[in-house]
Length: 365
Image (cartoon, rainbow, N blue to C red):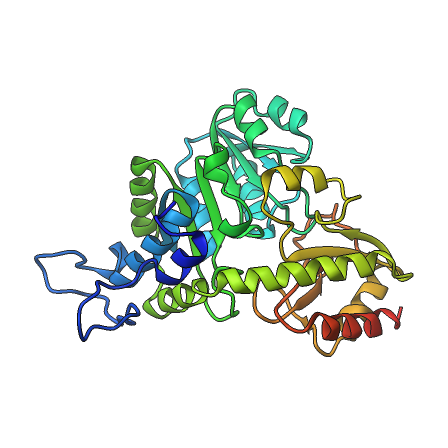
């Protein structure tokens, strides 16, 4: 951790040198080529904007950050480090893009994929025998399961990758629990404004960070100047956004649990949730995401998603606006995700307004 609290570092980390007359924010630098004789020389290898974002992000996780053009670009670079035929253990519920990619690579023989219930620690450890990598997502998307990262690390060797997009560095710090690489889709809560595409991988191993930077260069996964500026600007307010959204998420989860049109609420902040005790032990809080299963099947869920006025019917998550969508509307989503499941990303609006809008939509069921 940096010398300040995380909340203060979010505001001040990655700033330009303190010099009279100089900007306090890292400027947008729209250049692909630089004069020879110093670093950088070419934008694909890294820019001052990338460096500022990485300097701000790394200490939040306790490692060295590497920024990518998207979360999938970061995930692809991590996967690319694995040897040919690598055995990869992964959660059955994983972000759709990663899940599809892992299955594709399994089908062509690039990796051997073993899918597990990530909340079943004994099953994960058993499947990880002889594995080259364990790909953990916690909380999982969209089922909100919690993985016991320290126990998995203690019982399994191999590269331990943790997708901590839902939790953010404020919710959990996987490197401290034994992870080798932490992955974030910074498009989501870190950026926080639904206006920038970005992925960030963080590792405490300097050689691994260098290898990831090389994969970024050779695979063309470098983020643009504007995106680096936007994501770093969004990072500044992560603490206040996350705190407000998390508080609202808990209020909504408790009310939704009592609603006649809601068959199930998935949120680790509820005391009867299967992941509650694990969340209390491993995380600072339950986060800003919840999922509900509503009456009326897929049709009922679609009706709710399309009936809101304040909640935005759209994909993605982690923005200042609250989003709602039926995950199975995507053809590539796991068939194990219930057809009537709605994923809710809670923003920073008035929680009472959010509740009234959602309750009115649920009345349509």
